[in-house]
Length: 489
Image (cartoon, rainbow, N blue to C red; front, top):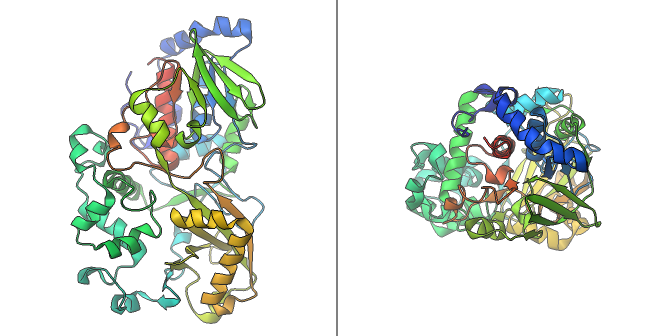
């Protein structure tokens, strides 16, 4: 049986993860389980080890347990969820990772229902209030002022487009892909150029590209660093989500509640705080070595670790070819955040938008509206991406938090003495991720169909291996694929 990317493009909307699990041919599943269970029962070992308790690892474990296999999940952190990370002790339960899922997230909505968590529509909250104010240096600019600003480097026809809007707008309008699902097809290899080259072809100068992308890149470190095909693929996925419906959903009380609930549904062991340092295959078995000296063995192992972390794990025999290259080189974007609260609504006093897009060290100030009253601003996520995130990390958490408060106060005097910076979170400094989103550099799109193939009895999943969806939906797509591979289907 071969996983059809298009068939499962919207998960439960097309078939459903639950339907996928229950619909697997039972004789094949039973054969996959019974072929290993005798030896596993004698040794007390599982049929499959899953490395990583993020959403893809948890879902892969559930799919295999549903088919009768004995599964153990090993996680290096002291929590589940991977890149789902909620500050459960802060007002509005701010999200440091995954934020929300659209109506087209069939797989995501399916597992949320299975987890029994309460979902709330949050899309309308994103649209409340005026758009973020643009700051060039210390100068606040409305859209109309930006269009006339002497330092605006955009072409005349695009002068009124704000920096954060320009690149996604051009990619959406000028995409070269007739079918976004084919983005990684070899027939499109000639389109695998840098996003910088693509934007130059649309008439943007280097100065315009730097302002519109490099300061706060959606993927990568800058426009030179990311393939245009990745941006066009993401654009197609977003358009498909919009076509599915206007709503966006998040877990009431914080998205982290969802993987926590899924973890409780596991039949097998879930081992937290077990940092993986080596994976060794020998004689048809795979042994996983942990930093505390513990070892675990099984006939098959699924690795959901991001390649940024996997490259620090010894693998014997070593990976080869494109797969080895991808593990060593796949990029992961630095993102760092500070959560800030205001004791009074200073934006009402100065009459300006609470949100801020800046070209300086402050990054982007994003208002959060996750209280019982959607009109209430429960806090701000102040976000730095790529090189700015690395700069913040070098400053250290306390200095970065102090800088964020001081800089907001300098730009918004009405905020002086009213701000408190709480948690600092850096995905680059999180040792089990070492960066947030994975991204494909120019020339690397050809890796996609090779880097997730099984290496002996070692299998791979995670959003970085998905080719038909992004974000949480991509992570779940990869768990379906890897479950079918393990079952030999």
